[in-house]
Length: 102
Image (tube, rainbow, N blue to C red; front, side):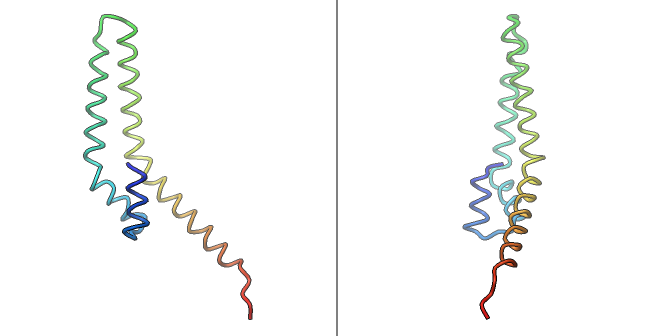
């Protein structure tokens, strides 16, 4: 998930946090998934190398990219929503603590 697309959806388009996440997935989700799968497949080919170093490096690289892709799709959206919630709470508390001249 691309944070720049998320911020664009929030600031320019004025979307809510949940709608901004859906916007990002609808615009770049398929491309991100395809790129991750292609990278995993490409590095997985190295796992069949007869040279042990290449084999290990290919396997570890493929595994790292796969875990990163899963984290991007499964952890990033809830994390963004939680951070937005905390930011909103901070703004609300700051607004409540400002003295008002009577």
